[in-house]
Length: 130
Image: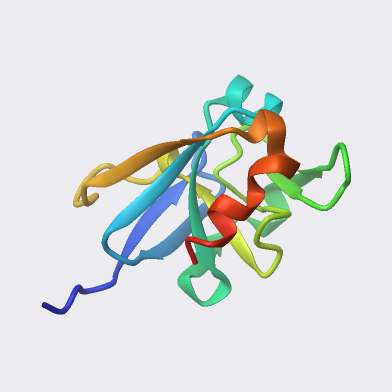
């Protein structure tokens, strides 16, 4: 059975940032327990660069880095929403916030918990999913 990859739109709360991400069924997302994801409710959909398109809002994005500085957390400077960012686990791609995708036509998503509070000990588990 062939599974069709489809593009899904998303963005920030105020609409200044808009993007599309191509999802590969079955869709898996991670509910990370690290400090920033836990506090912001970020649910990760890992996407390759070719599966992500920024439609508008590059000038509205502001960056925040912490800890190792490897991840580039991108927030809308108007509404403060982080709808996607460049994760240290996949520096050649993006992590899209499942919560920031338009709910219409969103496929079923398998949401798994990732122990990001102990990132170094657990990162191999998500890298091996690729």
